[in-house]
Image 1 (cartoon, one colour):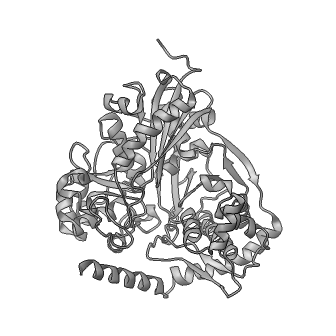
Image 2: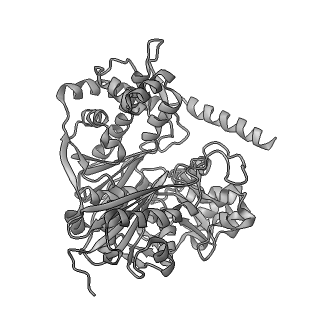
Length: 560
């Protein structure tokens, strides 16, 4: 029996850094009827491999692919139950993933880490987006591309990140050639999970363009790759290149196996894979030029559309149709935001703060925010650099590290916490200014992600960037965005922009810049910019030397 359009549902699944979440959405109006979250059993593997306990070097961050399938098995049916929905009314499912999270597989998609001969080999596992151990390979790619004048380099702001496919692929070749030789496909997790849902491998145009250096239909040439390493010449041809699917297209139908995992009808539409940040723009009704979406969580990804192609220094990429068809999709980002706040709470806050928070029944984050909100701007006497996980934009350098300047014996935890909050806002301001200076003006900042619940942080951002700040109307922005793409793939809406208007949700101008705060933060931003350029662009390479020393000691210990 045909499904009444008013009853039609779609499911969106967002695969994040620590968990996967599913949401059931009504197609005609975007109402979110139920959701569920499933934590990854292995989380982020950054110290020792599971089972074997093998020690990992610094800057490594891996994951276990079976954790992703567990999300399909658990979060999807639980979300349907929470919605009180009839699974028969679901017409499509869409997914999104953290970008440049990649894994080596066999020809049929089996992750190499699931083969007994590679279970103890770190390079056989998923390399998470924040795996930064390929910085040396990224440096060589950048140096060679600049020397040769490669036409694709300006499309990425002049620098390729260590997080991306080519740097990680070159690291795989050079550090584990036997794993590289066994790799039939070097796959973005965004595409691998769609492969598991449909039985068909479709490479999505979004990650191919932003993370796979695919521009104007061409990847870097074999000649270029051979100059990096002769054995790397066939990387694109043999392990990376694959037929592309456009955003919102149908990748295939839900397989019988995946229908069994999820409890959804076999054969329903599965949309082409996508990136968590890029699917969020339609969910926040932010698909027009000038609307920059900041998806703020463990890290922040900034995406926006533009009508023209411009070269923006330090951007993560620009791709035609990278967010919606017909516009140039731009991307930038900060490697650490929520991760920095969590690091400080876990490792830098005295026990009495934790005790006070427990007594009041609030989190330490809430307590520190409350205390920090009582301060006048600049009262703490600090300025910080938000590089605890390196710098993604606009410096594209993961050898940089965090800094807090101005600490004294009078400095308290709430002082440092506020300084770190402000530092992340200054980092976003640096990105906004760089885009505007390059001819891509930012007229509105739209925030999505868990951090938008912190009102102090949001006001700081509005004041620092001096723009009206809107917030997404959904607590599950990426998952809602994936559901929007599922609706398009299922034919329920004509295209992503139409679906965005029908199903997206946004609260416009919730935070307005306060003129006196803008003036005070402008003075502090001058100090931030001076530190930013001194350590990030100047001759002072102390941060690089410290990272190198740490890595050398760890490598020495591992070889003992």
